[in-house]
Image (cartoon, rainbow, N blue to C red; front, top):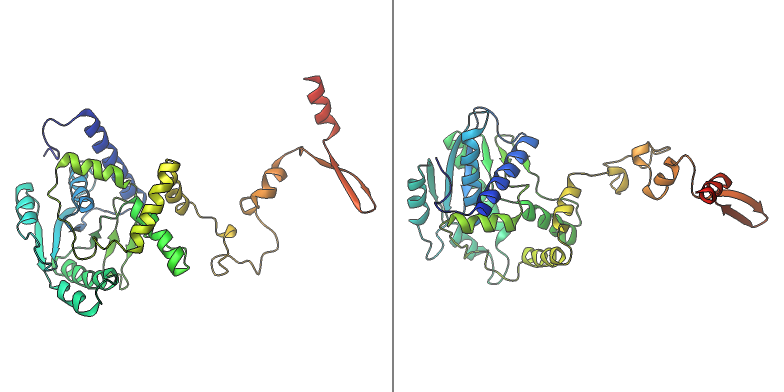
Length: 310
């Protein structure tokens, strides 16, 4: 099956292949999908979940393992929700799917005062419904459409407002261990997904319940990160790479690293301020003399000689 429109540009095909490659690498790096898995693909109707489904379909055809995909959309009974859009699209696509109806909208509106953030309650309600649906369908994996930028934004939200160094993991076991939550788009940049979605002409359904609230802290974090990215392209990716390359001995969590019992450091734990100097066979400056309250460092003579001869 060809998973893209006719008459697309060469640039679009390169972008598509890049996203397929990034998604496949994330799945492989974290062992997200295995032979015999049934994956419940959560479809909100937004660009990210549309892209996730299409990329998983493309990978399903070429993967060395056999797995099943079931698309799921949660109809939360929001006013003016276009109920026919996703079923029509998924029918045309030939994908197995379920439309799950649950009036979370009225519960959120009843419990949350006007103008307050609805995300926390809404996400808890959705999570329970998704888990129940996965169990009923025999799915052991639940795929969510969070991408690299979502993960980085969550890192800053937790730092700024929760005093915790915590993001969204690419793979997470549920509390009871019944399901594995996976994020196949963990290596994909939002701007690339947006360009891909435009080229694919997905039938996008906007979220009027929470996504349009301009006062959300997540939006402020997103704006901050995007401003950084404009100032220095590649910064978001560097931040994401940082959370995959953690050095506990250079943080301050006493539960994660035994600072109290620390008496000597291994080479990899050496403070970089001194580590680069310590690794050199001949330092740039060496202690030359001690005189009362004064200690003097000078360039070693043999280095000075070498510099003169050259």
